[in-house]
Image (cartoon, rainbow, N blue to C red; front, side):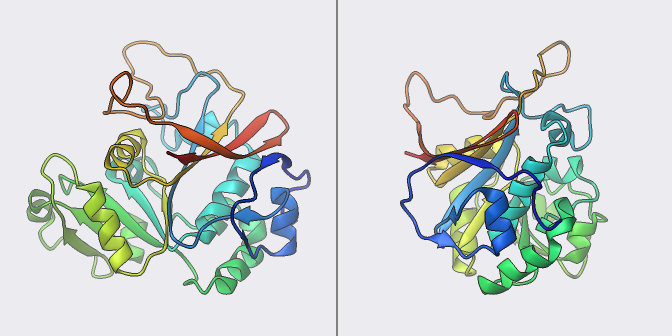
Length: 271
Protein backbone atom coordinates (compact mmCIF):
# COMPACT_ATOMS: atom_id res chain seq x y z
CA UNK A 1 0.00 0.00 0.00
CA UNK A 2 1.26 3.54 -0.76
CA UNK A 3 0.39 4.80 2.74
CA UNK A 4 -0.51 3.54 6.20
CA UNK A 5 -3.22 0.91 6.63
CA UNK A 6 -4.20 2.71 9.83
CA UNK A 7 -3.84 6.49 9.37
CA UNK A 8 -2.60 8.92 12.00
CA UNK A 9 -5.42 10.37 14.10
CA UNK A 10 -5.40 14.16 14.25
CA UNK A 11 -5.74 15.38 17.85
CA UNK A 12 -5.21 19.12 17.31
CA UNK A 13 -4.14 21.41 14.46
CA UNK A 14 -3.75 25.19 14.61
CA UNK A 15 -4.32 25.57 10.85
CA UNK A 16 -2.01 28.60 10.63
CA UNK A 17 -0.46 27.77 7.26
CA UNK A 18 -1.59 26.54 3.88
CA UNK A 19 -1.11 22.82 3.43
CA UNK A 20 1.54 21.21 1.25
CA UNK A 21 -0.19 19.61 -1.80
CA UNK A 22 0.06 16.00 -0.64
CA UNK A 23 -1.03 13.17 -2.93
CA UNK A 24 -4.35 11.71 -1.74
CA UNK A 25 -2.87 8.53 -0.23
CA UNK A 26 -0.24 10.48 1.73
CA UNK A 27 -2.72 13.03 3.07
CA UNK A 28 -5.09 10.24 4.14
CA UNK A 29 -2.27 8.46 5.98
CA UNK A 30 -1.11 11.67 7.67
CA UNK A 31 -4.61 12.37 8.89
CA UNK A 32 -4.98 15.62 6.98
CA UNK A 33 -2.81 18.23 5.28
CA UNK A 34 0.80 18.91 6.24
CA UNK A 35 1.06 22.65 6.86
CA UNK A 36 4.66 23.62 6.18
CA UNK A 37 6.12 26.99 5.23
CA UNK A 38 8.19 27.25 2.08
CA UNK A 39 11.04 28.81 4.07
CA UNK A 40 11.70 26.93 7.31
CA UNK A 41 14.37 25.18 9.39
CA UNK A 42 12.76 22.14 11.01
CA UNK A 43 14.10 19.16 12.94
CA UNK A 44 12.74 15.65 13.30
CA UNK A 45 13.44 13.42 16.30
CA UNK A 46 12.11 10.29 17.97
CA UNK A 47 12.39 10.02 21.74
CA UNK A 48 11.67 7.26 24.22
CA UNK A 49 9.04 7.93 26.85
CA UNK A 50 11.83 8.75 29.33
CA UNK A 51 13.62 11.15 26.98
CA UNK A 52 16.38 9.05 25.38
CA UNK A 53 17.03 9.78 21.69
CA UNK A 54 20.02 7.54 20.91
CA UNK A 55 21.83 4.43 22.09
CA UNK A 56 25.46 5.19 21.15
CA UNK A 57 26.55 1.56 21.13
CA UNK A 58 24.06 0.65 18.38
CA UNK A 59 24.01 1.62 14.71
CA UNK A 60 20.78 3.40 13.68
CA UNK A 61 19.41 3.10 17.22
CA UNK A 62 16.59 5.56 16.47
CA UNK A 63 14.68 2.73 14.76
CA UNK A 64 14.89 0.70 17.96
CA UNK A 65 13.81 3.68 20.09
CA UNK A 66 10.86 4.17 17.70
CA UNK A 67 9.88 0.53 18.33
CA UNK A 68 10.15 -0.09 14.56
CA UNK A 69 7.08 2.11 14.10
CA UNK A 70 5.75 2.16 10.55
CA UNK A 71 4.07 5.49 11.25
CA UNK A 72 7.34 7.03 12.44
CA UNK A 73 9.01 5.94 9.19
CA UNK A 74 6.08 7.37 7.22
CA UNK A 75 6.34 10.78 8.90
CA UNK A 76 10.12 10.76 8.41
CA UNK A 77 9.62 10.02 4.71
CA UNK A 78 7.04 12.78 4.39
CA UNK A 79 9.28 15.39 6.03
CA UNK A 80 12.27 14.38 3.90
CA UNK A 81 10.18 14.53 0.75
CA UNK A 82 9.22 18.13 1.46
CA UNK A 83 12.81 19.22 2.13
CA UNK A 84 15.14 21.03 -0.24
CA UNK A 85 18.10 19.88 1.86
CA UNK A 86 18.65 17.48 4.77
CA UNK A 87 21.22 18.54 7.37
CA UNK A 88 23.13 15.91 9.36
CA UNK A 89 26.18 15.90 11.60
CA UNK A 90 29.24 13.71 11.25
CA UNK A 91 28.00 11.55 14.15
CA UNK A 92 24.72 10.86 12.36
CA UNK A 93 26.65 10.03 9.19
CA UNK A 94 28.76 7.50 11.10
CA UNK A 95 25.71 6.00 12.82
CA UNK A 96 23.93 5.51 9.49
CA UNK A 97 26.57 3.91 7.26
CA UNK A 98 24.22 3.11 4.36
CA UNK A 99 21.62 5.88 4.51
CA UNK A 100 20.94 8.33 1.68
CA UNK A 101 18.36 10.44 3.59
CA UNK A 102 15.56 10.17 1.06
CA UNK A 103 11.88 9.55 1.71
CA UNK A 104 11.65 6.35 -0.29
CA UNK A 105 14.63 4.97 1.62
CA UNK A 106 12.57 4.72 4.82
CA UNK A 107 9.13 4.18 3.28
CA UNK A 108 9.63 2.48 -0.11
CA UNK A 109 5.97 1.45 -0.49
CA UNK A 110 5.06 5.10 -1.13
CA UNK A 111 7.99 5.88 -3.44
CA UNK A 112 5.79 6.94 -6.42
CA UNK A 113 3.64 9.22 -4.24
CA UNK A 114 6.69 10.72 -2.51
CA UNK A 115 8.26 11.35 -5.90
CA UNK A 116 5.04 12.98 -7.12
CA UNK A 117 5.05 15.22 -4.05
CA UNK A 118 8.57 16.47 -4.81
CA UNK A 119 7.61 17.07 -8.43
CA UNK A 120 4.52 19.04 -7.37
CA UNK A 121 6.71 21.16 -5.07
CA UNK A 122 9.17 21.82 -7.88
CA UNK A 123 12.00 20.03 -6.08
CA UNK A 124 14.84 17.86 -7.33
CA UNK A 125 14.09 14.11 -7.26
CA UNK A 126 16.03 13.75 -3.98
CA UNK A 127 16.93 16.35 -1.33
CA UNK A 128 20.46 17.66 -1.17
CA UNK A 129 22.49 16.40 1.79
CA UNK A 130 24.56 18.79 3.93
CA UNK A 131 27.02 17.31 6.43
CA UNK A 132 28.39 19.27 9.39
CA UNK A 133 31.91 18.38 10.52
CA UNK A 134 34.27 20.70 12.38
CA UNK A 135 37.10 18.16 12.35
CA UNK A 136 36.69 16.87 8.79
CA UNK A 137 36.68 13.32 10.14
CA UNK A 138 34.02 11.72 7.98
CA UNK A 139 33.87 8.46 6.07
CA UNK A 140 34.67 9.66 2.57
CA UNK A 141 33.53 6.28 1.23
CA UNK A 142 30.01 6.77 2.60
CA UNK A 143 27.46 6.28 -0.23
CA UNK A 144 25.81 9.62 0.58
CA UNK A 145 29.08 11.44 -0.12
CA UNK A 146 29.59 9.42 -3.27
CA UNK A 147 26.10 10.49 -4.38
CA UNK A 148 26.99 14.15 -3.75
CA UNK A 149 26.79 16.27 -0.61
CA UNK A 150 27.80 19.64 0.77
CA UNK A 151 30.37 19.13 3.55
CA UNK A 152 30.16 22.18 5.81
CA UNK A 153 33.37 22.39 7.79
CA UNK A 154 36.00 24.62 9.36
CA UNK A 155 39.46 25.55 8.08
CA UNK A 156 40.84 22.78 10.30
CA UNK A 157 38.35 20.29 8.89
CA UNK A 158 39.08 21.28 5.29
CA UNK A 159 42.79 20.78 5.90
CA UNK A 160 42.10 17.32 7.31
CA UNK A 161 39.91 16.38 4.33
CA UNK A 162 42.37 17.65 1.75
CA UNK A 163 41.31 16.23 -1.62
CA UNK A 164 39.81 13.03 -0.22
CA UNK A 165 36.14 13.83 -0.88
CA UNK A 166 34.45 12.16 -3.87
CA UNK A 167 34.18 14.43 -6.90
CA UNK A 168 30.39 14.63 -6.44
CA UNK A 169 30.76 16.27 -3.01
CA UNK A 170 31.93 19.78 -2.13
CA UNK A 171 33.71 21.02 1.01
CA UNK A 172 32.74 24.51 2.16
CA UNK A 173 34.72 26.33 4.87
CA UNK A 174 32.64 28.24 7.43
CA UNK A 175 33.39 30.07 10.65
CA UNK A 176 34.08 28.09 13.81
CA UNK A 177 36.83 26.00 15.32
CA UNK A 178 35.44 23.38 17.72
CA UNK A 179 32.10 23.38 15.87
CA UNK A 180 30.69 24.76 12.64
CA UNK A 181 28.88 28.08 13.01
CA UNK A 182 25.24 27.00 12.56
CA UNK A 183 23.95 30.45 11.69
CA UNK A 184 26.58 30.70 8.94
CA UNK A 185 25.63 27.20 7.74
CA UNK A 186 21.93 28.10 7.49
CA UNK A 187 22.78 31.41 5.77
CA UNK A 188 24.85 29.53 3.20
CA UNK A 189 22.07 27.04 2.48
CA UNK A 190 19.60 29.90 2.12
CA UNK A 191 22.00 31.68 -0.26
CA UNK A 192 22.11 28.52 -2.37
CA UNK A 193 18.32 28.58 -2.70
CA UNK A 194 17.30 25.91 -0.19
CA UNK A 195 13.99 26.95 1.36
CA UNK A 196 12.96 23.98 3.50
CA UNK A 197 15.92 22.83 5.59
CA UNK A 198 15.34 19.61 7.53
CA UNK A 199 17.76 18.72 10.33
CA UNK A 200 18.18 15.05 11.09
CA UNK A 201 21.39 15.74 13.00
CA UNK A 202 21.82 14.60 16.57
CA UNK A 203 21.13 16.29 19.92
CA UNK A 204 24.39 18.27 19.98
CA UNK A 205 23.59 19.92 16.65
CA UNK A 206 20.01 20.50 17.84
CA UNK A 207 21.42 22.32 20.87
CA UNK A 208 23.51 24.51 18.57
CA UNK A 209 20.55 25.22 16.29
CA UNK A 210 18.51 26.31 19.30
CA UNK A 211 21.34 28.39 20.77
CA UNK A 212 21.85 30.09 17.39
CA UNK A 213 18.15 30.95 17.17
CA UNK A 214 17.75 29.42 13.70
CA UNK A 215 15.42 26.49 14.41
CA UNK A 216 11.80 27.28 13.53
CA UNK A 217 9.99 24.02 14.28
CA UNK A 218 10.50 20.64 15.93
CA UNK A 219 8.70 17.44 14.92
CA UNK A 220 8.92 15.00 17.81
CA UNK A 221 7.76 11.39 17.80
CA UNK A 222 7.15 10.18 21.35
CA UNK A 223 7.65 6.42 21.51
CA UNK A 224 5.96 4.36 24.25
CA UNK A 225 9.24 2.57 25.02
CA UNK A 226 11.26 3.21 28.17
CA UNK A 227 15.00 3.16 27.44
CA UNK A 228 16.47 3.75 30.89
CA UNK A 229 19.88 5.20 31.67
CA UNK A 230 22.79 3.20 33.01
CA UNK A 231 26.55 3.32 33.26
CA UNK A 232 29.03 3.62 31.66
CA UNK A 233 27.18 4.48 28.43
CA UNK A 234 25.75 7.99 28.20
CA UNK A 235 22.33 7.92 26.58
CA UNK A 236 21.66 11.41 25.25
CA UNK A 237 18.47 13.40 25.60
CA UNK A 238 16.92 15.68 23.01
CA UNK A 239 19.38 18.56 23.58
CA UNK A 240 23.05 18.02 24.39
CA UNK A 241 25.97 20.40 24.85
CA UNK A 242 23.83 23.43 25.78
CA UNK A 243 22.05 24.49 28.96
CA UNK A 244 19.14 26.93 28.78
CA UNK A 245 17.27 26.88 32.09
CA UNK A 246 17.35 28.66 34.48
CA UNK A 247 19.05 31.56 32.67
CA UNK A 248 17.20 31.27 29.35
CA UNK A 249 13.55 30.44 28.76
CA UNK A 250 13.31 28.60 25.45
CA UNK A 251 9.91 27.07 24.72
CA UNK A 252 7.93 25.32 22.04
CA UNK A 253 4.36 26.22 21.09
CA UNK A 254 2.28 23.18 20.17
CA UNK A 255 1.10 23.42 16.56
CA UNK A 256 -0.41 20.00 16.10
CA UNK A 257 -0.58 16.54 17.62
CA UNK A 258 -1.35 13.19 16.03
CA UNK A 259 -1.56 9.65 17.34
CA UNK A 260 -0.86 6.26 15.83
CA UNK A 261 -1.61 3.44 18.25
CA UNK A 262 0.72 4.11 21.22
CA UNK A 263 2.92 6.70 19.48
CA UNK A 264 2.38 10.46 19.64
CA UNK A 265 3.51 12.78 16.85
CA UNK A 266 4.01 16.28 18.21
CA UNK A 267 4.95 19.45 16.39
CA UNK A 268 6.21 22.61 18.09
CA UNK A 269 7.08 26.08 16.88
CA UNK A 270 10.15 27.30 18.75
CA UNK A 271 9.60 30.71 20.37
